Amino acid sequence: MKGAIRYEDYHIGLDLAKNVFQVHGVDASGQVVVRKSLRRSQMLPFFAKLPSCLVGIEASSTSHHWARELIKLGQWRLSH
Image (cartoon, rainbow, N blue to C red):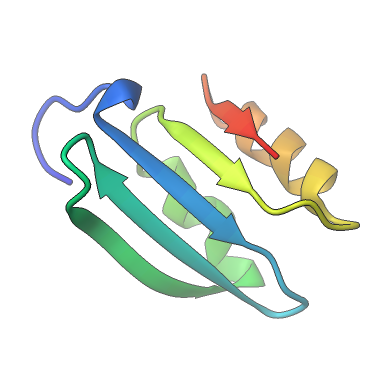
């Protein structure tokens, strides 16, 4: 994910779990741009480095918590 990227340029799917989260991102053409496993402690530092984008979060007991945390990082568009 290099250069000037707008949130319309890619979408990220976030699969939440107790300890290890799965991140899958695609660009506007559907090409995979990121596929990564993150520990809980790595989540916010990872997303803090990304430009604003659309993040789809699975519906779970912690999805609202993580949505609020991502919103604090900037102008994130969230879907869950």
